[in-house]
View 1 (cartoon, helix red, strand yellow):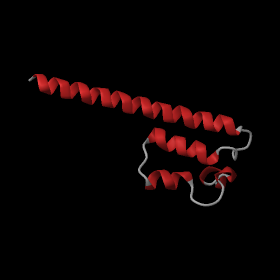
View 2 (cartoon, rainbow, N blue to C red):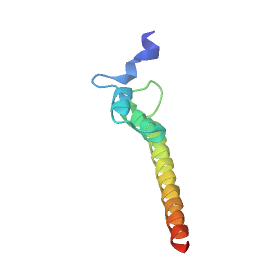
View 3 (tube, one colour):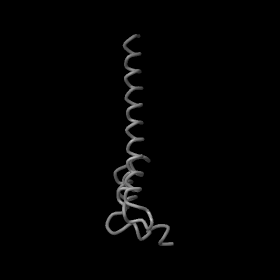
View 4 (tube, rainbow, N blue to C red):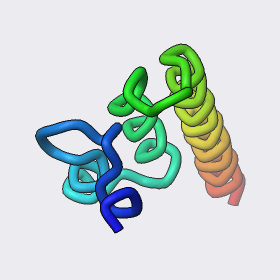
Amino acid sequence: MTQINHPDYYGNGIEAIDFIESHKLNFSLGNAVKYIVRAGLKNGEPTQEALQKAIWYLEREIERLNHEEVAMMAMNDTEILF
């Protein structure tokens, strides 16, 4: 059961899930934090791989925010026309 709810690679201190939930991070940001926190600690996973995964989730979040911003600007432009 410990390997499910507290694997060795989680380390000591605050667990990633507790940080993620306390800061109400969305899925992408939460996963980025998770991969950063456990980088170099999970057996068999190279540090670089974990950090690449974190970057992937951060880039995905940036893309989501950019799309959201464009959609908001388009809505504002439409409102001005009417």
